[in-house]
Image 1: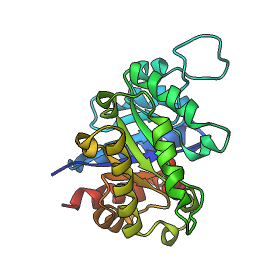
Image 2: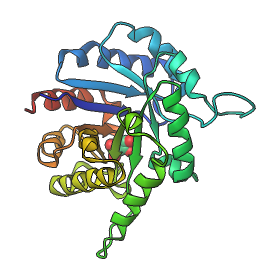
Image 3: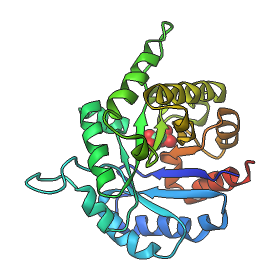
Length: 254
Ligand code: 13P
């Protein structure tokens, strides 16, 4: 049975270290009970150091929410992927729609992926359209996002990338605004087809996640009927009991 991947993207939350350690403690103490799930927590940069001290030896992983495309140097305010690995994190989210909304392009995402991988990080690459149209323009948009973000990235390095499909129109809403599982499945097939066209059939093993208003109520249908490898969870990952419920449900899916 393939392990499901459940990732918490805390975004710019919570507002103090006490709340962050409290939330992390609850997840780290309970998530490892569900051995069929790989749990990855992505807190804001400022909490990574403290949380990584708490998690040594536990079975969950830590990730950052972004990293810069240069290794080091005069880049005020930026964070090097090498600084992230140094703190013990193994993952980084790149190309999240929140960052793209601030001006991040596919070209920037591509540069960031390359540096992150050379620093030893696994990448969670986010893609997703802002709206759907009847002419299928959104499919061309997704195809371009994938092609441009992965330009020059070898097949070997693709194995270090998890793709998180997050339709922007479904992010941060109530549970019934999440994408319908049948559409999630369609998109998963589409993404794999694009990857196969860039590389070859061996990349059909690439992990594809869904993100966008996922929670305990729709975890089962999104993973089972959407046939995705897991979920990238936003607001529901800030409530320990809800996030643990998501992990428990994912753990039980055959
Ligand atoms: P929500 O789960 O809050 O919709 O956020 C999804 C997301 O953007 C995770 O990266």
